[in-house]
Image (cartoon, rainbow, N blue to C red; front, side, top):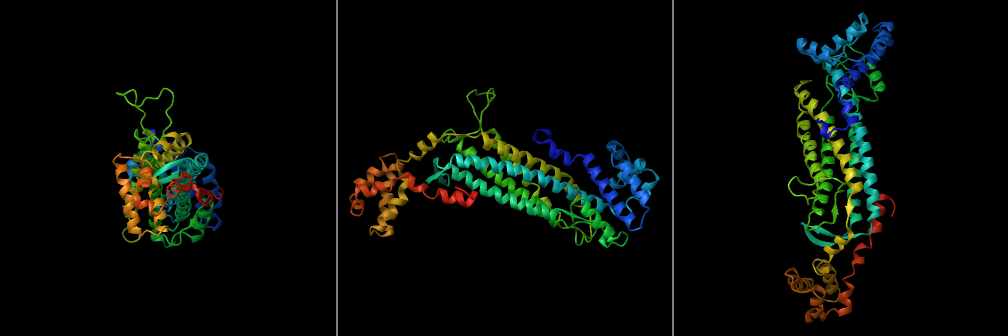
Length: 435
């Protein structure tokens, strides 16, 4: 995490004070359950809450203790005893460090998912608004980067909306999968801690009980979570890359908003660069870089080891903070995106009508030409246009072999731009539930 790409709400989830607050809540809820079961005095559980509820944990003091004991949870418990007093001896009864660490990590990941879901909602709202704004704004569709057939800019945005809608569904599922709690003790057998303690803590922390934890919560859950973040990051990059291509000088169909006083280059005063979407491309790489380590974390020795620990201390904050920033930035880009319909029309006309070649091909076959012959006739007239030698419609009308099948009027009918937009309403109905 670096401040440049960090938003406060997401950063707060990973702040040491937040982490220690969650640690305390887990321990205090566990003490409540143990008190109800008669394992520790009820008065002790009450004191633990009273002394710790509003405490500010001294991060520097905990770090100082950890330098001596070489164990983060023990360092925290030692500091907690300084706050709570003698009743602290009833804290962490029968529990192991992973009970606290794993449950806390899952709390943080679920809270992070909630913020990311809010980010997705904001992005979806921006995409929907702009898609309907440009529902019937014609533009050229491209395959292999080359002009293909007409579409609309609204359809392009509808595609992105559908993709991020799927992203939202995946993140909801990933949040549910990672939202589990383990308070099962050494090697996960509950030998020293009653399973009812786990049930109580899980409910209090808004989590589900982990069916079998083996002392650690299975990391396949986390692998799925980070994989989903990686897919979302790829969707961010897909849309960002589309905008970057469309902003190229030779295309200039859209452009990132350029504010008053903004400067694009230290050397060239004329520049207006797609810096936000280029930045999003880079940020997506950072998020995806967490996926492989998360997958490798699934493999642990026997009931547990800590090979996953250092990895998660980095990828947890970095991936969620970075994706949070990226989604918010992308929503802003879409919301303020400058769209140039005149340039879109100019590009549609750039190839002299070649974008209608398939309609002419089909028309010829419907009038009796073999497909191979129809393709040859259309391509024969298309290639000169590629070389800048004439207009496609005029060449077709002048081709005697084409005119054996189609009259001039029948050829012209196939050059109607509106023909390609006739099912836009259907697409929007499918994507947005309205047209």
